[in-house]
Amino acid sequence: MNQKQLETLIVRAATCPSGELAQLWSAHLRGRCPSNALARRQGFAWRLQAQVQGGLSDRTKRRLRELEVAFAADADHQPSRSTAVKPGTQFVRYWKGRSHTVEVTQTGFLYAGTEYRSLSEIARAITGTRWSGPRFFGIKGKRNA
Image 1 (cartoon, rainbow, N blue to C red):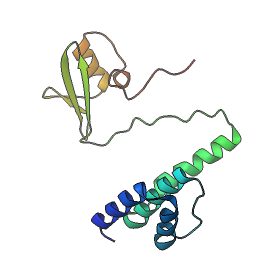
Image 2 (cartoon, rainbow, N blue to C red):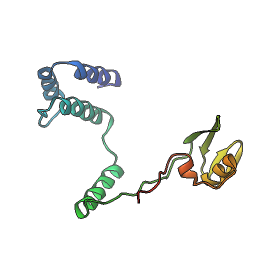
Image 3 (cartoon, helix red, strand yellow):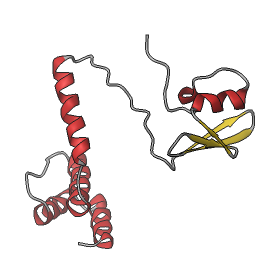
Image 4 (cartoon, one colour):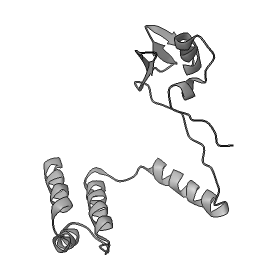
């Protein structure tokens, strides 16, 4: 199945009657078709797309297993949020009517033609005061007390 066929089938599944969707499920997927209509539509689209394009990465599956174990041991577990970003990622922040764009590089961050070691240095350059760079650019919020 090519990308165009996949997209056409997903659009069809989103609008067809529930009985027809169950037939599509049987024709294209293995396993039990959910009885809940919303779960059937969303599940069909996700599973078909995963079948054609690949599902979750091994890394994602491993992280989900780790979280499952952590939540089984402590229902109030608070997973840490990773702030690691890939080179080429851009952050845009509007500050006092101006747009400020930062690009992640292999060695740091590029802002206004200058390379910086941290987002906090850039936040300080923009505002003139000390800021948490990740918080200023919206990739890390305040921790709950």
